[in-house]
Length: 377
Image 1 (tube, rainbow, N blue to C red):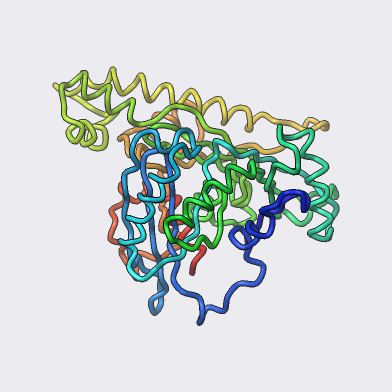
Image 2: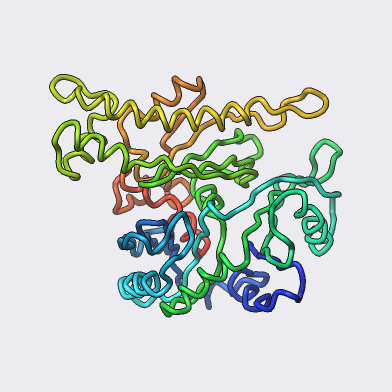
């Protein structure tokens, strides 16, 4: 389970964070109430509640609420009162569920991997991470909350490999306080990339290193996943809204018509609507440039022996803007690697037993919320 450590007792909210960000002793299933997965971006709050039902899991509730402009900017909360109001609206629509797992945006995170001696106790590992912070992140230990997950117990005689996530403590605390103000009991906070990985990864040892691309409305989050654990993350200001506005202007379409054009014809448009390709290709090229930059950097990394360290074997695209028709093939052609729109229900249910109430295209918007909801079952 995910927990976050503060470097010392000098950080006064240490025990408060333990309540929200730690689950050392999970509640027995028979006593555990249902919880929601809540995904907060700059523009919306999406929630998902998944519950076990006989032989499979089912979607009990889901939805989305718009966040007014300026309330959150690049992941930082600018208007806590307005965000709490949006979360109260979400709570009202979640029925009797008043607990949630939520994600922190990548913009403020520092993610890296490191090796520690095998079978090292957790407390010792936390001390090793604290020692590494000075060289890895521009935060002092007293101003940071951090934790790790084990990627590999044994890595060719060089110890156990772990993935580390670090956040500014005040940044994390602002999200905790927003949920408190909304009357939602926050069970955990984690990096968005962890939530997406829980949704799309098999976590099998032979799973290829994956470059996860969360293509949203205003920004795109990148994460390198190794056995379902992020070892790198970054965010760029390239989003689907730019594509929508370009299409609206070029073809004189309404927002709804532009969205339909992107999803139904997109980069494969022909005939009279092919004029929209110019607008689409420009924006798609900007995204593919970023994908290619991240892909090739990780694909060509070598250690001091000249051996490949983390060659990327697959690109997986999620997010509401991932539905641009032809986008996956466009990127695959650019980087010459397998690129997919994943089945975000793979770890929830089998379609032979249950069909979720959200279609495949819409489901990509809920990749983070699904991963968070999976923590509650």
